[in-house]
Structure formats: C-alpha cells, structure tokens
Length: 178
Image 1 (spheres, rainbow, N blue to C red):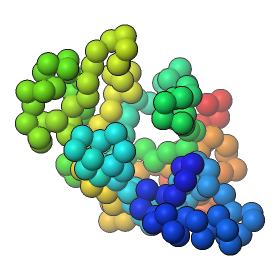
Image 2 (tube, helix red, strand yellow):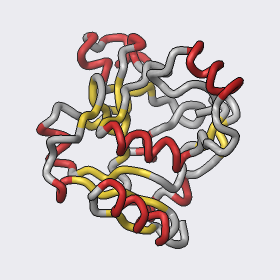
Image 3 (cartoon, rainbow, N blue to C red):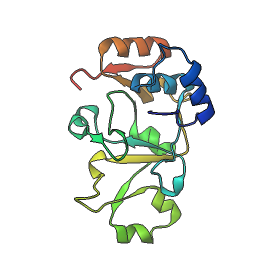
Image 4 (cartoon, one colour):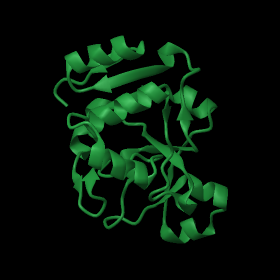
C-alpha cells in the first residue's frame, strides 16, 4: 500500500515513516510476506459495498492477468502485482466466498444488502470490471488451518518463490514472464 497497511493505525504508520528501519519495504513482496506471516489476508473496506471489510480474489489464472495489468489513476495503484496467494476455488466457497455478479445500475439498486455485497456495477464502457472475474469473502481470509495443498504462493522470480516456500512452509511457484 501507499500508506498504512489495511489494519494499521495511522499513528503506527507515521511512527514507521519517522523511525522505521531505512531498509524496510512496503511493496507487493513485503505485503505478501506480511500476509503469510500473519496467516491471513485482512479484509479491506475501500470500494466495498457498505464499506464492510472484504477480501477480493480473481478467478483468472495468473497467466491471464498480464493483459489486465494497468495503472488505475483514480485509485492510485496498479490493478494487479505479480505476487499472490492462489486458493482452491472449492476451499474459498466452503469458507463463504462467492463469485461477484456484474449487474446493471438499475438491478444493483434492487438488490438486498447481502446480495449487494457480491455484486458489482456493470455499465460498459465506462464501468466494466467483469474481466477481473472477482470473488469476494466477507471479513478476513484466515488460512492458518487450511491444508497445505489448498494454497499456493505466487511470486514473479524463482528465487523469491524458493525463499517464500522455505520461510513459510508452503508450496510456492514462480510466475516467470509475468
């Protein structure tokens, strides 16, 4: 993030800025390492219906994301970074994650609060997020108790994948050519 972590108080972030180690990083690799060490992905409220904390996933394969990577000027960040945690779809569904429905603005207004959590405004060409094939989970995604084979750590470089696999005891894969 360009700012505090999702669950970090602004005062703690300011302290890190002022007094944190000069060699510490706040990039995509550091974010993934933080998720792996906490064994969870913290649900974010930004741009979520009702500002409820949710975790978003994509059903797209890593090699399909290259064409979707672009700078989102309005959001101030890239759509995707070459780091991630792949989770079996059945595992996500069992934990309450659901595929997002892309609906018209008129249909969106008719949805209940629960249905709205798993819906996204679809009004092409101005608003079209459907290529992301998003899934959402309400709250945090905690994966410490999941079987090792249900998860796969993704990194762009083989040496990063090896380092992450060794440090966290998970299966890791390099996305060479991402």
